[in-house]
Image (cartoon, rainbow, N blue to C red; front, top):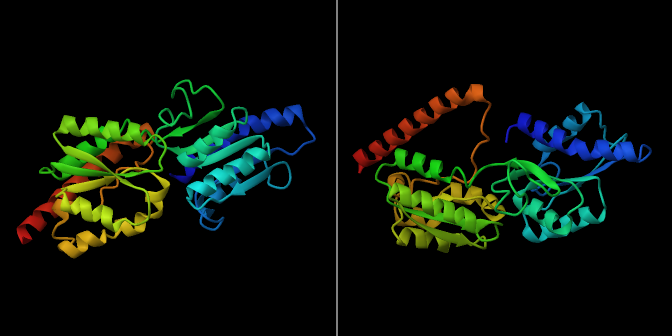
Length: 299
């Protein structure tokens, strides 16, 4: 997520309940709980510093007229639950939950404290809101529209690899709302004539999972969102060991297609940037096709 969007979303949305509380209790310093995803303030610095600046721009200065209560769960599901409980028990004026898992855990614990979620793939499917136009309840925030864009993800992949016919969808078993994500990809795959099957990962032992994908003769694999997959991104991105051992990684890219990371779409840019983004996308697709042709020519 870009720093600008983060400032706009978190600073604006989170300030509403703080302003209301300030009017009700002018002598009390408002408290905002923040449930991050990384393991420390240093790892979150690029966004934590932006959050502090966003509040400063709105007139809220840490230690003066606002207190930020931070929690860092290190993308661990158990820590998300524990820290969500800690923040709710503090009865803050608002809670900012950066990830889907954090937002869902906080939502389960309170229907009164205002919640601002930041990076959520499917707020409707995970039960955070009733609808995008009218969220209802006590949660609001930004949708990455991962479910709505699943068809576009596969269409772009099919354009880049025209002979793609078999695709494994790697799913984080701990991700809330995974069933809706799987169904959306299955429908998109049927429309494109792609045979797609879900493969769940529940531990960090990824080698057997990718060995099975290779054995099933998948032409590629796509990753969805999830804390576990986020923590494994470096290992998966460098190429699963079973694939490296069975055949040369680069020369077999047309079969495995490296890592098709479809689960982290960029935020839709302002309207004035759409033309530039589409141009860049076409150039990326052309580059992918050229690389595939080179691989085939070398074979």
